[in-house]
Image (cartoon, rainbow, N blue to C red; front, side, top):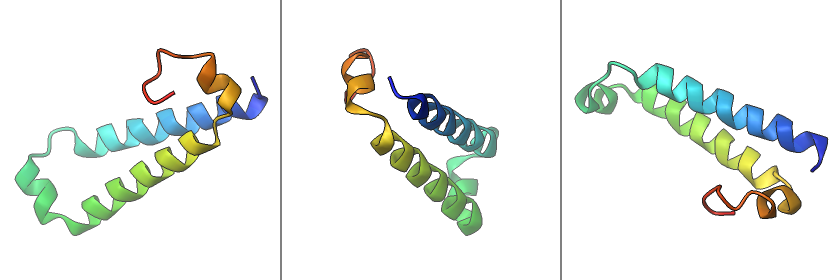
Amino acid sequence: MQHDDLAYLGHMRDNAETVRRLLTGRTRAKFDADETLQLAVTHLIQRIGEAAGKVSASYRDSHSEIPGS
């Protein structure tokens, strides 16, 4: 495992937590009506994907419990 893998996983967790915090207590209608919130959530999900793409193949291979690995 590369040291950076833990950093990428941490970034993914932190961004996912931010998405959860932003969406907690909001209805789908409120989300749909808030373009700024939509852009923020989209950006955070994009950052999660970018970090996921940087996790080493050896780490992914050694953690088959992670979907998509």
